[in-house]
Length: 207
Image 1 (cartoon, rainbow, N blue to C red):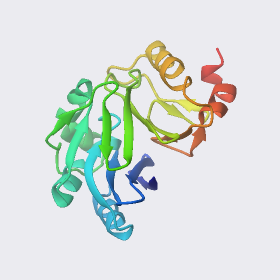
Image 2: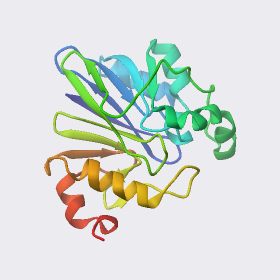
Image 3: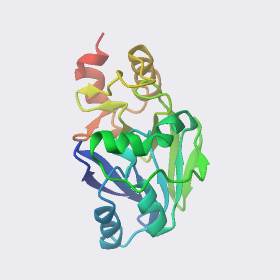
């Protein structure tokens, strides 16, 4: 699996290019800003991106999605419970000062246990509400893209619309920490970590 990390937006959002090593076909996760940088990186790494997948629809993860979708002719996917944030993207972008060409059209909603399959790239959708009601993680091949559900030594905020601290903790403990301890976690912000480290050191999860 090819994984390239692109840090975008004033909030330091991790946008991921993920593709098959054999065919270089794959997906982009959370194109939050800097569409030109994302598109140039796709070309630089000689990738064929076919799907845009958002772990959730907060402004710092979504603002470049419409432009990237249009320019590379990809489809756009997220969980239906975050459609509210997508529908208010222009207002969010004005509030936080992140430029956008608007919300992308949704080509398909993702549900818990769905799989994203492109050649030998197979990622399972895990619905992890708490940071937002439509929050998802993508798990496969020894890694998990955790969005703003789980960070290194921290967890996602729960003070936004639709957030719930008890729900987020439950999502993490029952759906993420149960994975193989050696699973590498690629979060929506900050450095990578592992399930084992977070299970034993993350103070939010030691309660």
